[in-house]
Length: 272
Ligand SMILES: C[S@@+](CC[C@H](N)C(=O)[O-])C[C@H]1O[C@@H](n2cnc3c(N)ncnc32)[C@H](O)[C@@H]1O
Image 1 (cartoon, rainbow, N blue to C red):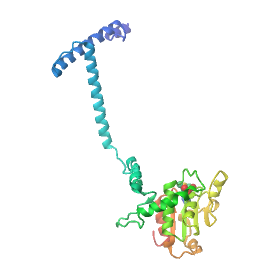
Image 2: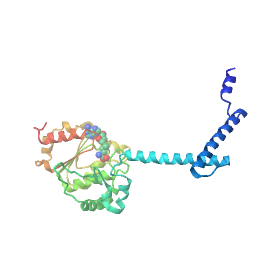
Image 3: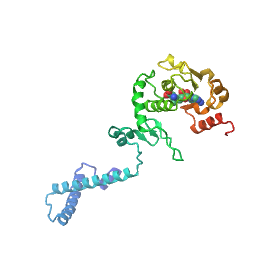
Image 4: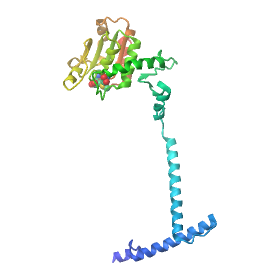
């Protein structure tokens, strides 16, 4: 019963009634299009299939123009970083500038201070260092350093260590020891202090890792967090009297501001 009522209201698709209704709808649309075309183009579309074609084309045109409009409007809303693919591509045409991002170039930070001071090194120095570093990097013992440093940060660390020529290098966060190896390549004879909850030697059981012979490890059972080290005593043991001769490198998943405060406190205990 209900089915009869429903079918009376709307003939099922494909039924003769449905076809008839579709036909009359089509005729009405064609008639409208005919009127529209007559007004717009000054001629009459007698043929229905022609009217359908015109209707479809108009609809398609509206959809395409509409989509293009929405896409271009949305693009304007998206923030595009200055380090986009175009900038990266331009490396090949404009040298090292193409690898610059908001944070630095080739893994070496800009280090622009609020006072407008810039770093001492130039782009030329970076490129010269890069040429030297590429073959060194190829000899790295840990080829798969996923979750650790890749090429750019390795170069940055190596470059800065070489530039600053510290008497002592401290790293917090060693993982398998890649960064220890990088520091060693930069300064072959200077001591290193490495802090990491897991000793890099532990990784040797599973695959490549680096353990340095001239490094004091606060790692594994001897692990001490950077913020809890008695730095005065440790630095004295290493014969350090001038704190500006020490390079500290943090790559330890900790809050870097906290680390900087701890480092300042280590050299100036009155600092809170
Ligand atoms: C990103 S990885 C370091 C990668 C390493 N610098 C390299 O050669 O690529 C972070 C390391 O920090 C270590 N870590 C976590 N908490 C730490 C802490 N409080 N002090 C020092 N290292 C810590 C982790 O165990 C891990 O090995």
